[in-house]
Length: 156
Image (cartoon, rainbow, N blue to C red; front, side, top):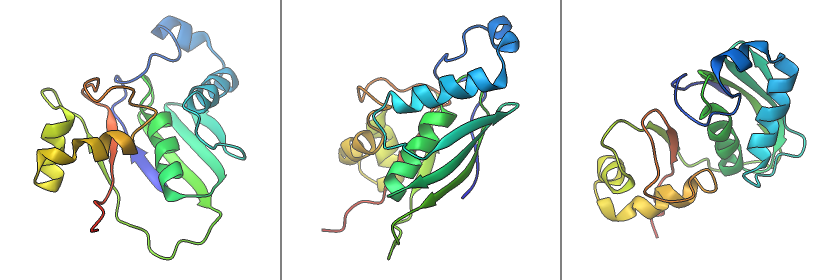
């Protein structure tokens, strides 16, 4: 649980242009936001989304930390959103929570370059890609301002 920051003017153009967005009611934006999250086939039963200005408030329960992180990233990587207030609770007890990092893409980044920065080797780019599916459909299609989940590498 916590507040996650995102770059406001980066991400999916979910609400249309600025004029259309200004006219849209918060309830309608929240519906579109939840539909957007559900479009990634994430397990969101029981998760609700509401908006407070440019902050998304996520509440409810999910089974895994991985699923929770993916929902947060899907909600935050939207143009016009600058924060996600995570109030999602994990339903299954977690014995050990592997440390998860978040990384904000900058101009000139690609997944193998990010892998080199965070893991010390560019060969783990696919780990980052898999952790961010289905938000990422192609490992070559990332953009500045996008926030990615960087999972811990398996020690095995």
